[in-house]
Length: 231
Ligand code: SF4
Image (tube, rainbow, N blue to C red; front, side, top):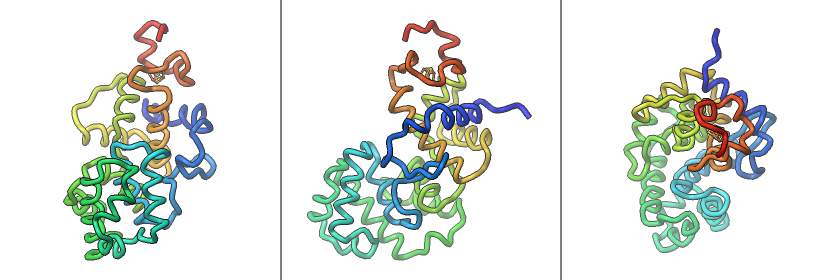
């Protein structure tokens, strides 16, 4: 069977880039990457996925998560009991505090009212999307990293890298998600690792202005095949 372009990209990133992923950004187990929280810390992972929206993990969102931990309120029942002023102060490092505050309250109430882990993938996704401030990328991040469901989130980094590396252009979130999911093995560890690698690679090499001269996978990239290597 012919190897798909995303599948080749995945292998190259594992072989050529995984060792460059900064420790502490992701949990690493051999060649697999996972969310930087204990395996069974479902709520911590959900909160992290919300707080990291439009924020950097290391300098912003992780500090907000640490604040919640230090205050001993990283549980749905404790979040709903915490006054907004206190909660706002705790999550301040992550930015967009008013919006994220509402989302945290809503998602905590949802978790108290319903056993989310008993829902099938589409129902769980629908429930998460019904929360203000949770869009497709965050819901899929939660499905994958908090509930271990085989659903890959599509980040701006994933789109940018695949557009360049595979020279593929798709219309919307769902098309990208379907394309990626159908191109690599349907496996939670693979999805987690691929999403993490794409994020880090998009931050380090395949940035807005790509650093192709330094890129460890440039020999196989269709973008550099089309354009002269003066970037
Ligand atoms: S060679 Fe350039 S465009 Fe291609 S993946 Fe690397 S950084 Fe991105």
